[in-house]
Length: 221
View (cartoon, rainbow, N blue to C red):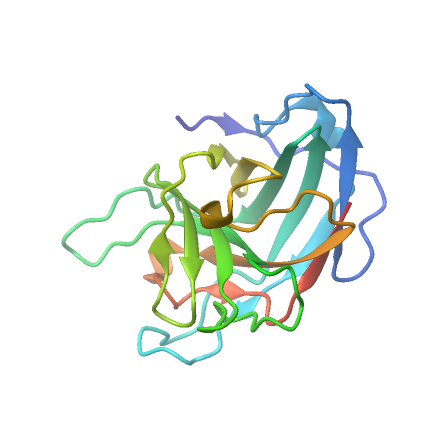
């Protein structure tokens, strides 16, 4: 499932502050692989992370991840998001001796509004989370606040992952348009709020204990 590949040096100008600009490719272009050629053309955003707001009992200590790089490609009705971050140790299995897995996620407000609480939403304004875990699980979740994340009955979210010289590279893939009960529909949007999170299993990060963006970014098409 995982392969070790060297990081590539990207010379394109980074995306504007707190904006992830989507690169529009021809319909049918396949960006599912972490090293697909199209990623050389997509703008790179440097995303600063910090320990999640301590609004849940599981959030103790300091998260290790301070930054990830994000890119996005649209090809027809499909959105690809590539995330890369440093992680010295690959934690891919949960065990009985308090080991936890690495992970990464992006989050969208279901209603598409930046007024939605960026910390897992709230009862009136839920969020849709695309969550990759290094043990092979990829889940589309809905959350109505801290501790409320539940898996959606949807198998259209796909992922690909690779170990790099410095950590992980992950591509999350989903169609822009989905049914109302399948997550946030992104079709027809000029811009949509997006947030990011990462977990370092070696630091025993799990659930709400993670590194996050503390406010919405904008995914701009």
